[in-house]
Length: 196
Image (cartoon, rainbow, N blue to C red; front, side, top):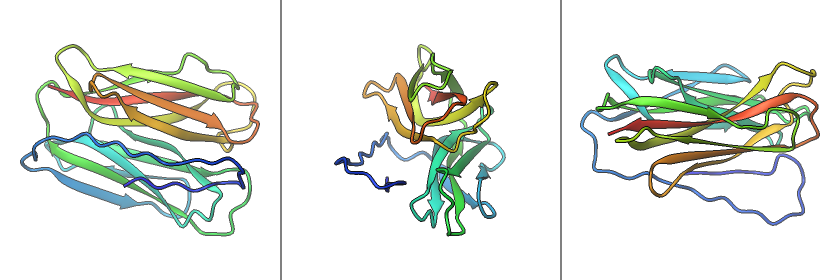
């Protein structure tokens, strides 16, 4: 399930689209979740001997002024981190972040691949693409934004908008935008969970 809401009033028509990567059930697959303490981020670990095949994140009680900055497995594939931030308007709600990990016994050829956007300044939007190595396919798609050295300002005005697995299951696209003008240097990172 994918849901979204406006973080500031908007007069543009918009919609939400969900993507699913489908396969026969994997023996031993399970879904883990963890809700962090108030604000910021949360991490959830897979059981020992298992790896992350998919990830998800949720802002709980966002009150229209909180957005996701990161929903991504670690390179080791042992956990998922989800991070969020207020959009620059103080939220009156106490919100939390829940991280989800789809865990299963580690499949052959397993690796988590990352690729950064080529733009890393204070541009209003950025896109990144990551490709799975030959002989492997995308099992999970994720994305993250990151603050880079440069002018102060933080990630308060940045939001993820697209995490898209290509139909051929060879690539993942990540797209993020500035929701308010931001002088910070930042990038977006596409993440693919790859396996045979």
